Amino acid sequence: MAGMEAALAGAVAGLVSVPIVAVPTSVGYGSSFEGLAALLGMLNSCAPGISVVNIDNGFGAGYLAVQILRTRVHP
Image 1 (cartoon, helix red, strand yellow):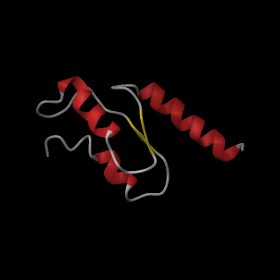
Image 2 (cartoon, one colour; image 1 turned 45 degrees about the vertical axis):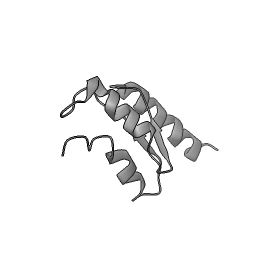
Image 3 (cartoon, rainbow, N blue to C red; image 1 turned 90 degrees about the vertical axis):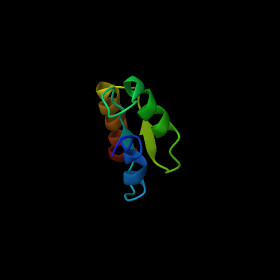
C-alpha cells in the first residue's frame, strides 16, 4: 500500500512494549519526496516509545539502539 511506510513504526509501537527506532528511507512508493513524507509521518506518530532518526541514517539508528541497550544493562 502506498504511503504505509510512515505508519509502520506507529503500528509496531502499538503492539509491543519496547522502544522502537524508526528509520525513514529515501526510497518509497508514490510521492515519497526523497523520504521527507515518511520522516514527517513518523515524527507525527501518536504512539509512545518511538525514536525517529534522519532519512537513511542507519548508523544513527544503530547508535541509538546501543545507547538504549546500555541504559538497560548498566543503569
